[in-house]
Image (tube, rainbow, N blue to C red; front, side, top):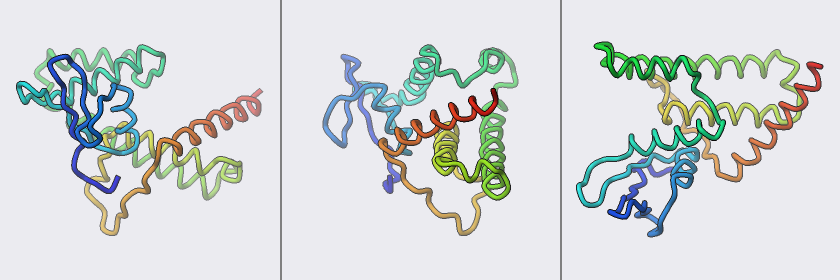
Length: 183
């Protein structure tokens, strides 16, 4: 969305989550959808004023991981748990942010190069796969831009929920085609 202000979600004493922009209650899946669409969210406890955003984001990740939508390998999860008990925990957030930045840059360059020289570039749905990859990276990095910021960088094209569903469908089709090609 063009609006850079975070979407304010208030948590009531009943633990229900209230979207202050639309004046209705939302679920964790709704919040995940807002984030996938590129919107920043902030979740505040109505009574105490505490920022609960991190807690709810971790809960969203845990729910996806438990449903089989695994992104984080066991060894990474194990290392994260260890980092909370080690003196190195002060460098872990910076390391993770830099790692995701490098991943995003490397994958973006790879996808650009594939579009120039790879025979897959002519396959139907290749652009959708590139868009899906960009959405994934944006979600994984919390929408962080390149660091340091590049001059002349344009704002990324807004992706809607319908676009994401179409991209997911096209990606599934591509994966099926690739699986058939590898047999």
